[in-house]
Length: 408
Image (cartoon, rainbow, N blue to C red; front, side, top):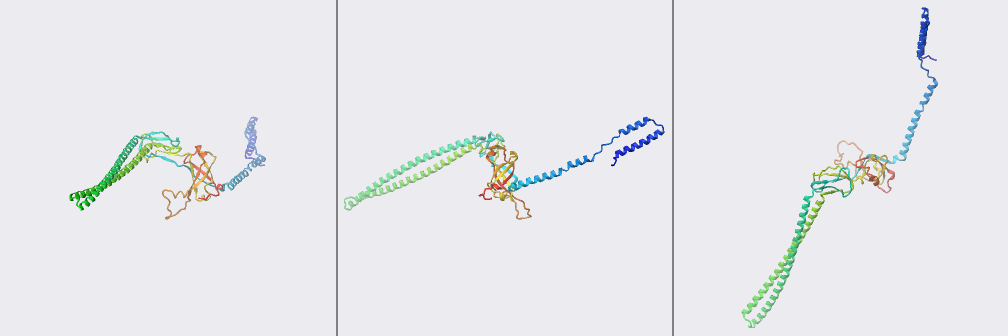
């Protein structure tokens, strides 16, 4: 067995001490010196020797670690492999998905100063709730003016109706005068014929014949005048009726003006078009606003949906009606089950303001993404946890595709 360096040092010290003792003894050194040297040797400590059995046990304790690690890796790989084979290979996934909604931009229909603001940011409103009002003084005056003009126009129609009735009476009078003139003419004709016969027999004088002739001509002239009077009266009635129709059209115009004034007055009260939550409120009392002014946004929290942008290499197996697992951070770890509603008619780049033009220059192929609309269950939306704009991880299960659906 080899001697440790420390023990060798001790032995060397012992030899030197013995030699020194002998030397000192030769010179007459006493027993006290030998006692001091013995105490010094006792103070030197020698570490305990590690036995071979203990080292072997330590090596045996460390050796099982590597097999355990390998076993864990194999178990994990087997689990994920089984999961992919039974489910993962049927899933089409993307994290390029967001919650969206058909948000409404609240703007006034008419121009005016804001009178009251009855909403605040993040407030829930119901359809028909008053959100704000504008100063309606000018619009009330406009409504009163429209009503006054309508009343005036109706009076005009009544006046013309009376004139039409008078014109009809004039026609009847002219027709009566025509009948009288025709009767007078008939009498003049009879007189003229009788006098002419008697004059031929020399019974009547030439003067009487001339008088009968003059009466006949006068009768004819009176009939012609009566016919003209009837025609004139009838034409006047036609003119009056045309004026009446024009006045009645004016009444319709004024009625529309009243309706427009009433609508403008109603537009000074802005109401919520549907249930939702107010956001991005940017108006204060006293602001002058118009139809181009953005007052607030209304988010339909109960009618949200998801727009998921899948790669063009993924959409071949996605069809409307397929089920999708939706992972939203705001809703916790439990996934939401949605349904594929539709696929967009083109990729996102097609509908951009500046579509890519690849007909010239160098070309680098970029995988396009196609928006897919996914519905969210109503009971999930009613809880109010989901907000527009939140990101979502979507997994579409291609096994749930309806057999009768056509891929889009």
